[in-house]
Image (tube, rainbow, N blue to C red; front, side, top):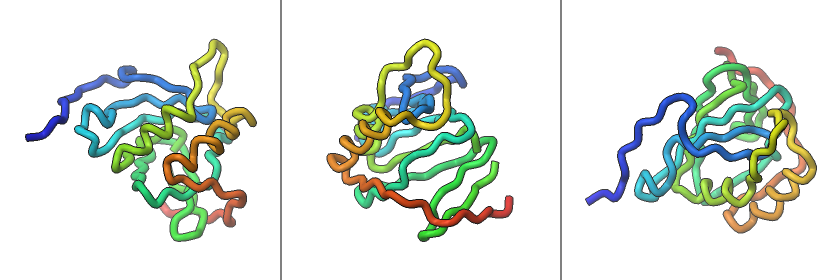
Length: 146
């Protein structure tokens, strides 16, 4: 018998966290999925950069809603279209725990954009506990056809 909890949320509903200078909205938490996955809606501004990283203990599926998103696929940087807002599905649910440890409380006046050094420091400290390795360099960018 599944322990998953049915979820139906509107566009502005869900738990919000400020993570790496972007606003994440949890649409499905690991508790709601019975520990199988989590799903977030990530709103970010132009120039938001997540440190290059790998995480062999979990998978990540990204669905770009609008704008652009540059991702590393098979060692090559590709710009995915459309993407300033995207949906992230993490399986299993360990990524949600990393997000909870790497986020901070949303402050009045916060705007999406590049992460501050303090954001990167929190991620760097939290990453190893969740099997995530932050990398230093980004490969050259290429653009994927839409």
